[in-house]
Image (cartoon, rainbow, N blue to C red; front, side, top):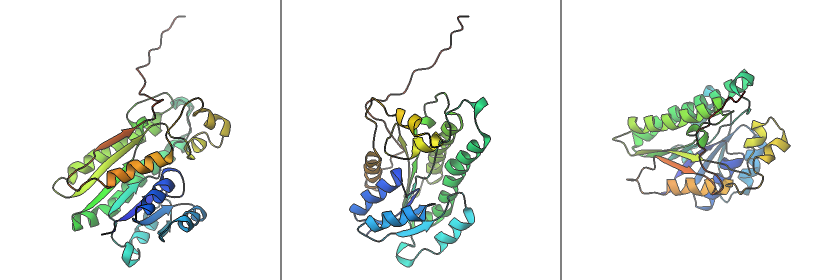
Length: 252
């Protein structure tokens, strides 16, 4: 049976790469993102015609209507990939923009939870399904300037584990996929508010992961047998490791 996979944030980065990877493997896709032109461009490049939803994952009513009106063959979502998310700013807390914090919480936490809340009931009713949440190493390893972004991804980790606890006794699986440093997405450009130079310097003199690496990891998680749940999958490039604890020494 062909599985139907819904990918949020499908127009670029991990979402786009995952759509291409899963399309090549014969999955049926529902692609959700804010930018309709990017979605249409992606859809035209795929082997099979996906169903497209133009929406922001923070728009609960729009999402509810779109999911209620899925075409017949796309009606039942077997796999939800909660990929949509963003980081805004690298300033310490005292210099951060409140609007950036609100946007990250609305998207990374409330939007992800909303999508899950809308689709979990049908998975439980059918006693099958899978939710893959795209987290971040920032949710496990704190660093200066990570503040609300890191906290929002820590939410993704704990929410994933709590969701798995709630679903115990069903065949619905839950995974938190935790990428480290990844190049080839719009992540850093968005985080640095369009400052291309600062964004590109993040990847200088190292070989980061690429979106295709994350897409293959997601496919691997999906294709594990039904009796196996991957709770967490943390992936970093070889050039990256979790940092040690910081110590400030006042020598004045």
